[in-house]
Length: 101
Image 1 (tube, rainbow, N blue to C red):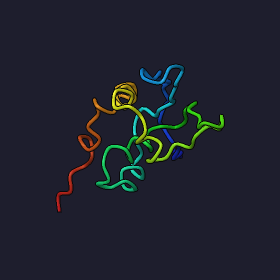
Image 2 (image 1 turned 90 degrees about the vertical axis):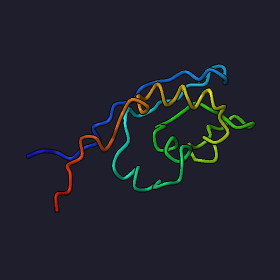
Image 3 (image 1 turned 180 degrees about the horizontal axis):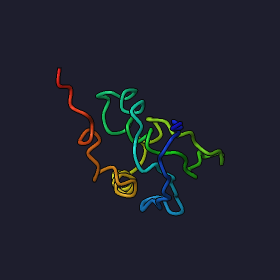
Image 4 (image 1 turned 180 degrees about the vertical axis):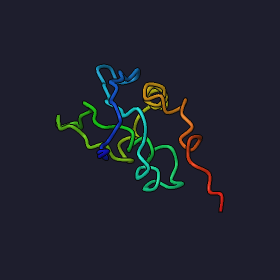
């Protein structure tokens, strides 16, 4: 029997604007990620793409990956994250079956 598991791999990406900043990103999104963010825009999508990071607040606590915190990243780091994940090269619906009804 086939097992339904998360098939994604993770990739470590070094940020360019935050020295020592490192982000672990998934190499794709799941259907539920796309559904959850809908037409919300790039930042909510990226917050689903990021598995973890080493970014801290001013008290030394690791910040959670949230749309608000992702929105605080420099746009050049967002590009590094997107490029590193391969998201910009993927057409998620290209292989989806067509509804012939």
